[in-house]
Image (cartoon, rainbow, N blue to C red; front, top):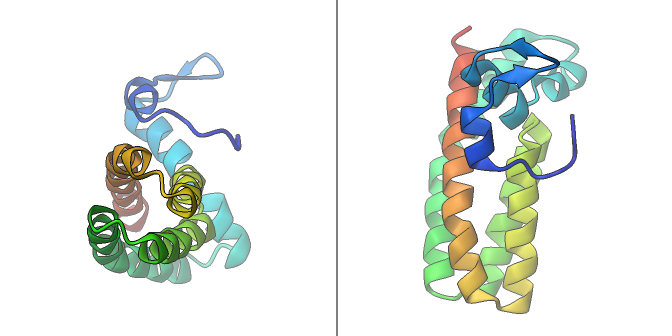
Length: 141
């Protein structure tokens, strides 16, 4: 998996991997959520993977809501702390694109770049929605 930050719009319309039509949802899910991370961590134990993914899904919305409040209130330490928690959690489950965006949020909060933070907030919310969608696909499979 590439370490670059994929574009949300590009992911939504992507259909090709190695010349094969994979269907947009399958490709998007693989780029948004790398289940290989959990496979390696839990030696392929699907029950444990599902439990971890369900816990992430349960906690995700409250964190994103708290992050929005912290950004709106220009709470530097709050944004940094929440972005750091989200970054770590995202990377732990294989949602590295979202984790990378959370790292940028963390850095922007350090700099006090509120205009950039507000612009990135929407991107993080959109990526989180895609991660949750990918989690649903994995857990329900």
